[in-house]
Every structure is written in structure tokens, then in C-alpha cells.
Image 1 (cartoon, one colour):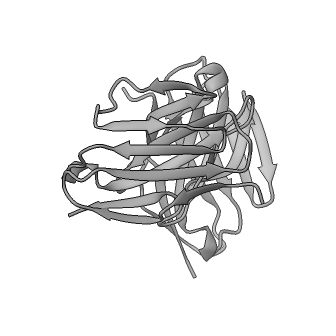
Image 2: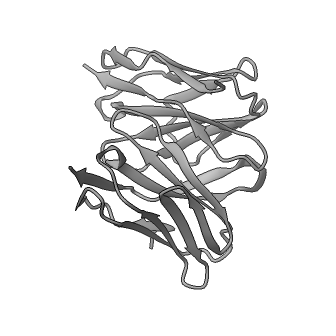
Image 3: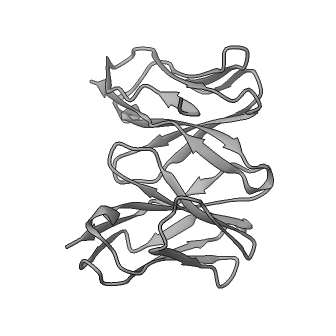
Length: 111
Length: 112
């Protein structure tokens, strides 16, 4: 089945230690998104790629960056995680006229 | 005023009940409306996708959009314990980028 795959499902890192989360897709969608979701809250869009064009949301902290080396893969880099960055991180994809499809997320814990 | 408002619940119903979940929105230009279901520790899963006003039915699920009132609803008939999840309404904006605005989600528990 075509899908959006996120690895790892659970990630534990230390305060201030850089961490990278990965997302891959077999849908061949041209748009990929990263969301942050905290407990009992709606997903919050951090940024998205439209093809190779990176689009940052205005309120996304500088601590968060992303890379998209090809159509299938997208990475979320958190340069210096703080305790407030503990959350579920969701990757999603879409293409023109298609709704967003989500992966199952990576739950990030900060020690 | 938030662009999308959704009652967070929790909502608890007995098995077999009809469930009504609702959202209101503020921008009359919105045209595409979605409902996602999110189980605990999983990503959101698309349930229903509707354009403009009207109803759309898929099995036990019916999505309804009333653009005049800026009101969207999801009805679940014959609810099952497996329907227990958080239901998120979402509205598409941003043209080709398909960006979404989400409601805060309603936590539903269907009691056997």
C-alpha cells in the first residue's frame, strides 16, 4: 500500500542534543509537511515543501529546520531541543486536489 | 476569534448511539472541508472530504457542510467502540499547497 512512513516511532534525546526525524512516502506527492502536535491539541504546521521549495511558517522557531533531498524523503532537524519541544511530530503529504495523508508520527521525549 | 472552533469534549456515548460532531469557522471563502480520525499514538486518518455545501455519506459516516452558517458536522450512525478516537475537523486553504487549518479535536468514547 502507498503510504507515509515515519522513523523512528519513538525518539528520546537529551536537552540540547540535536535530533533528526525522518519521513518517507510512496505516494509520489509533491508536497510534504511537518507538524508538531502536543497532547490534546491540534496539529501545528511547522513548514512544508512544495517540490523543492521550502516554506516556513512565520511562528516556527529557528531551532527547527528541514531537508528534502528527493521527492520521497523529508527530514526534520531540531538543532537544540528544549523541554518544550517534547511532542508528537507528524509528517504528511499531498498533491494538487488531493487531501493530506499523514504518517503515524514520531513521539519525541526530551531528558 | 479562532478560524476554526471545535468542542474538545470529551464525548461519551453508549454503543449504537448516533454521534454528532461539529465545527464552526470564520472565513466564508473556505471551500474544502475534511474530517480526520486520530487514534491514540497514531497519525490522523482521513475520513471524509467535502467540497462546498451539502452532505456526503460513506457507510456509517455522514459529513455535512452549511456554508451559510459556517458550520460543519460529522454524524456517526450505530457507533461502535472501535469509533473511540479523537475527531479533527480541518479546512483547506493555501491553493496548490493544500495547507490545512485544524480544529482542536473532539475526543469520543463509545462505551460497549
